[in-house]
Image 1 (cartoon, rainbow, N blue to C red):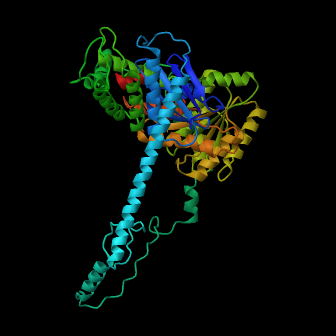
Image 2 (tube, helix red, strand yellow; image 1 turned 135 degrees about the horizontal axis):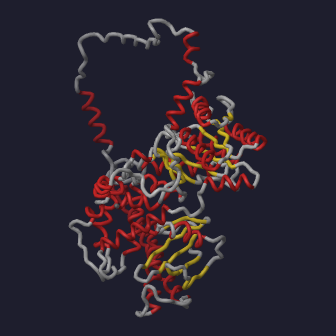
Image 3 (cartoon, rainbow, N blue to C red; image 1 turned 90 degrees about the vertical axis):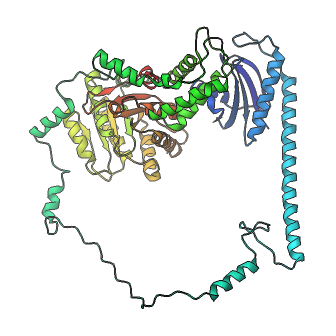
Length: 582
């Protein structure tokens, strides 16, 4: 019923394993890389390489027990097997074994066979008992039906359509109620019913008391208007300011002000763990952490995280992961339980937010230029999050920081004014715009733009797409086609830092749609990274970054911190953790 079983240490040393059926691929390697190293220990279940994996962590020994199987197995059976194997394995090693000790490969085949046979027997017994209960219920229903037939009553049907003993009422009671209802005089209004009055239709709205003329409609169409020099200067002043220094470098903090202001801010934001540990048992040094010790601290931790825009699901899973990794551990000398929990949370969140691959967009674009090819970035997201404005910020960054020749491609062929908005940014940035108007196929426009950039000597193409809701399948299918046809170097999801629980729904459905609806199922592309807008408006509520990274496993590449082109920064994991934990 199971395919394989593995026992290994937190350090990655495989102590024992068995394959009852040859396992294809490397589900265990993927489990370690994509789950255990991503601080998802609290989930205890995953589906990888068409296999289901369930595991148990024994903190006292720093051991992982993993069962690999296909199909459907009862959770109780799997948990029972894992518990029995863990207990038998520790007993097999002897009482002298402890966390941190070096162990070689263990002979455990016969012990595991006994555990599996015992678990299989318990499963069969539970199924047999379940069958007996089903038989008893069926027999009970038959006896009730037989009694009704002996009394000359008709067969009864339950709400579900089957014979049963729990009915709302029998037919005799129903007939009596109908007769009683007919005997009562009906109350009718004395006056004759008047025919219904026809509803008044909605009148058309007119401007200035008359009908909208054709000339007026033409005046309202700004699609072909061009910015004059005065308007262009005003727009450049709006987006460029007075020569602000470019802010896309990694910074230590987003806050500014005097030392007193920073001290006051730290006290306000950093009071999280003071409130968490108030009225909580807090033993210093040598204490063995239990569920009861950790529960009040982690419960308040989850609540505080959710107030900082971390999605409830992510806060819950993250705290469960930390709890599972700490239960049974002993606190260090002169170290309180609260400090131990805080340090574990800090390390877990930093590990989660730290990119597992290079996300230096400027370096990647320069490398592509040196290789003689065009570097392409596609921007996508829901409506109204600021894709076009932040695309312009990235264009400014690549042009002025790397000296790259940038081409903007207008693939939002749906929203009125989208092309004109990009034209404004194009003129302010002095960057060319590739557009084909409205109503065309975005995938073909992007393909033509990349070909044009290749022939014209442009280094980078930034593709703007139409905003769409994550549940709109036709639009998501068109977006998946654009990505599959053009195979961009980077797919950036643009989201707001203001969202909480919505962050999970948005980014997960966008990512899943790109993969599931891809025109190239052999090599589907998902989201490669994220750009968070309005980051300057959330103060200490920066939890959306944590939520999005947890769901996708992809990093936050940039954060937008204002309206100007220079207001773009790289996100630092330590800064986010410091803001969330204090």
